[in-house]
Every structure is written in structure tokens, then in C-alpha cells.
Image 1 (spheres, rainbow, N blue to C red):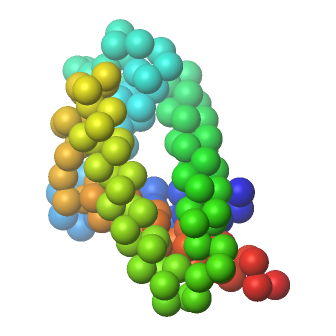
Image 2 (tube, helix red, strand yellow):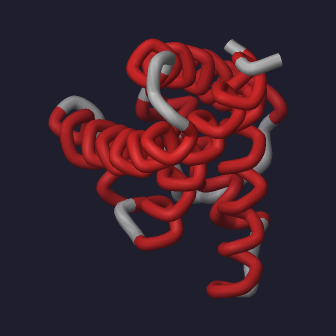
Image 3 (tube, rainbow, N blue to C red):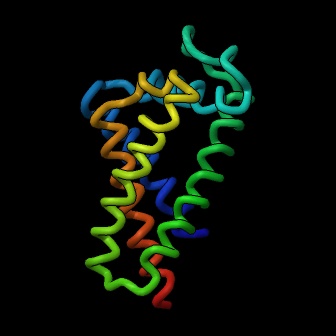
Length: 143
């Protein structure tokens, strides 16, 4: 569980840094992504435009990300629990790529608005998630 939470926080921070470096904007992509995510539960009425701040949307999106991070972290932990550090990190990279493909290509069949965030920054954030979850799991499991 903790590996997914740690990885979710690190991936979100990494994504924010990449937005700041590459597009010089953190707020608009963050608000856009929270609206896209919250629409999974709240429906298409919360989708942009306009990009806006809403505490309710932010809470729903954060809860969805939290649940997915824990679930994906537990799934990865199950897959790597007998692997070495190096193999775990490599598996984490592949896992990050797999959840990017699932979330942004597979699920767009049901939620087409996620095609908007198919980009290098989102891919990199998913790779950070996979590696961070693998590393956090291995670190926590060896205590």
C-alpha cells in the first residue's frame, strides 16, 4: 500500500516539475487533469473547457488517484516480491509503460477525453510511478 502512495506522490511531483520546465505552466495542466479524472465519477459535465478550480473536483480526482495508486502499487508489489532490486526497477519501468497504455489507450475506449493527455510528460510520470513504486516496495519490504 505504502509503495503506491509514495509512488503516486513522487509521480505527481515529477509531472508538476516537467510541466513547469517544458511548458512553463503548472496550474492549467493540473486543473485540466483533475477535471478529466473527476469526470470518471462525476460525469462529463465537469470536463473542460473551461479549465477551473473546484474543491469538489479536486477532492474526487485526488481520491481516484489515491485508490489507483494503492491498487497499482499492490499489483506491482505482488509481481516483484521475489525479484532483485535491479529486476524490480526494470519491472517498474515496464509496469509504468503498461499502466500508461492501459489508462491512456485502453480506457479511452470508454472515456475518450483522456486522449488529450497522451504526451511525453504523462508517459514520463507513469514511468516515474512504476520505478518509484518498485523502489519503495523493495526498500520497505527489506526493513
